[in-house]
Image (tube, rainbow, N blue to C red; front, top):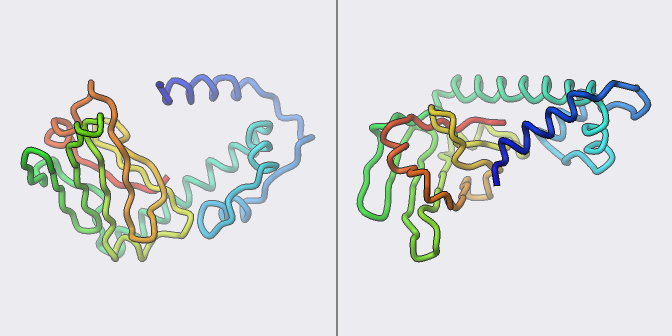
Length: 182
């Protein structure tokens, strides 16, 4: 399924909405709370984002500001958020890319019917900067998103790469990888 296409379609539909003001609002403080310390937005707040262009605009603005703040905190702590393509050590079934702040390991898992399992391990320096509700995404400099999620209690994110048409090993040698807050 093409999630980017679905997102563009939904975005196009939502962009035609006219703000009526009848659905209420979400405060910037509540948006910030939902993206940093929790709790997540409740069902009524999520519905409001679907119904109100102003609420969506506020949400995007606050999210961009939080993302910028987190990125600056990471950089201030000397944590790298990008792995260069030449940072990969490989063998047949395991590729390890080490950085200062996080590591990415690719495990070949054709036995499970998937080309690769992706493991991102955050180092303590990266974890210290994150808020409890922070969602991260691993994206290559070619624009392909490899995974997205919230780190678990061990500072790990995992995903199955199930697109046999896209060789992420080749991409890891060609493009740098960036782990960034969303």
